[in-house]
Length: 120
Image 1: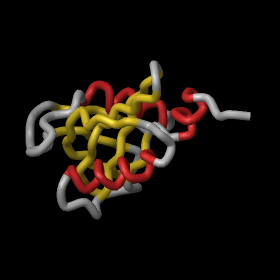
Image 2: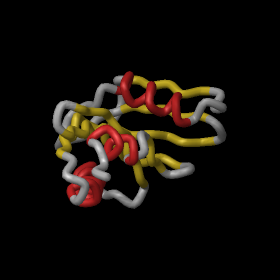
Image 3: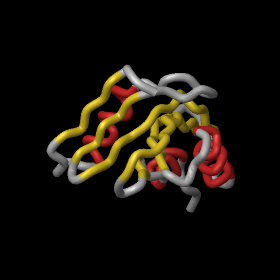
């Protein structure tokens, strides 16, 4: 039985970020045929936003999924709080409203998930 495009997209988790700290993040749009979805990836190991995007891109390429980086920023992750802000020098500012929506779905028990378009 063949795996549908929707199943392949749903197999990719919407959010994968570090458990705590301040780190860069990217908002990535995935495409498979007519289907698409956005995901958030953020890690402290990344020196540049492109490091995160390129790592992710390699991982999903094998599934036949096309990707587009919609921009980046930073996330501060502390005790049940997420704060999204800033932008990527290379990719520009991500739409933080989309990132916050995905974060709220992935962390429903958090007390605060907010964003600001200020800061770097």
